Length: 280
Image (cartoon, rainbow, N blue to C red; front, side, top):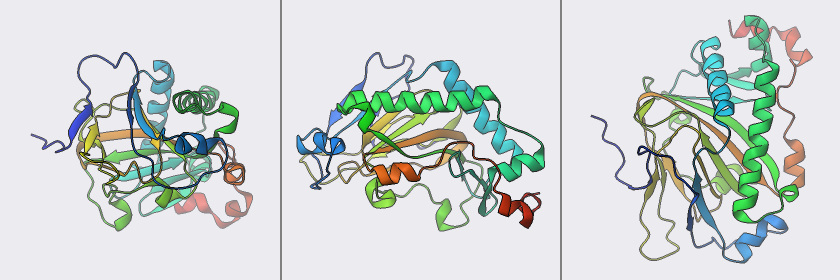
């Protein structure tokens, strides 16, 4: 029997999806942020929320099947439990490294469908809209930061520090420009995997805080202000596969401009180096 989490369950899987967003306000970390992203922080509106049935179910299914397909084509992805697919950097985990996704796909003679491409862009925009509405930030001011898929395989052992996905962290410390973080789950606790709860740890900024957990559920979105008011971690996955899409947002125009378009073509300089052969 899986041990589960010791944290209090804030959003469980249960039998029914949440009928409306679940919201908790938290005390903001003291940090000046200019522009639209700073308004919630200036006015003490730092928070975390959960929304079920966040995007059309068919879209979430397309993304889930796409990641399952890519992992199968990449011979299981990384050697440790977590594998990452970044459709903007064009990279995928393979054994102990990241390899160029376009080179792998050329080697395997596969390609993304137009449906997969359109669905990813549509979901990414939908998450932006939800975060914009929940935090009261004009959507045009809320810019895309990193987006990537995580695929955690409970049957694999951690071999390096990079495989240890379960450590507590704060996103602004880890990623720098994140202002808002959103996570769309593409699998369900106890159906697809055991363990893997998302845990908000006490920040030390308000009295009576306790750790609270969100149980991943297919098409559930959890989002939060990314600074020290929302330290978090993931419980170890003990069985099965846990899939999620992380989509972060910023008001840093320079950082947003550095995020390349999704589905980049194969880089010509690497074609000469035989990158595809390296992943065979």
